[in-house]
Image 1 (cartoon, rainbow, N blue to C red):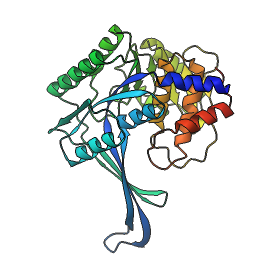
Image 2: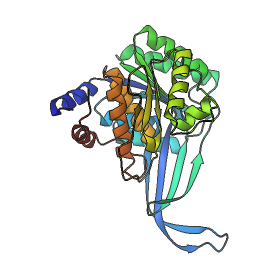
Image 3: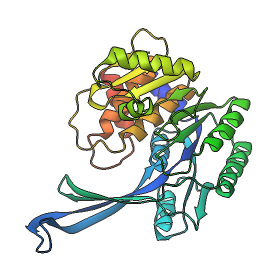
Image 4: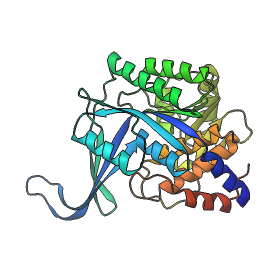
Length: 333
């Protein structure tokens, strides 16, 4: 792709406003060294020397959108607890809007704590609530969405579902009807619980595991023809514009009627795959909102997902690096 066109694409991204709805969390890291085994059990002792908290889940999607120049507004619910305070401080640190964040005494803020020795993850500890929000909480969330939509000219709504309970079938229906009535595009990063609850959306982006489990398929990841056949059937039945399946090291498959459907992954030095899906849905959503061809969407999203895998932990995309790499591989428009 020519330099001028790459710059033009990213300039277009900077004009996009996105409403991100979903499960936000804190990704917490503890780095240390292992030099002995516990006397209490045959397990290593990690002596922690450094720790860091990062935004995760739907908040990491928002960070990726922001890194690409877009303006995200996140709608989520976190606990009225100390972990929720940490989440709110992280939003402020990254200059992300808290206009869509609600606090609940009934829910626990999701925190994923990873304990590492060097680059080796030793254990992950999850603290979370996974039950669906109740009717009162859903009404609170929807009214906040209504208010934000009235105050902003959003180009796209992005559902980021981590199965922690913020996204309900009823909320999906209400928000989808609202967005479609206002001509706002809808992108979805689904999980199993709501897999069948997104008819008529513009972009549906499961990973291979989610796709296989959602459709209850026995299918190999490298059987591209069978995956594409199942994807096209699901797309037609649910009236989706584009279904975009990530296959990690095997690249992506996109179903929308274009001639080239499978795009292999760029060869990368993989350090950590966590957060790659957040980057892919952010890039793909911006491409959709900017009216870019689906082939371009697939290639740029594929590239971006590979780039964040070179970094340890959940991190947003480096926009300048992505621009540079996009020029180098001559992505075709």
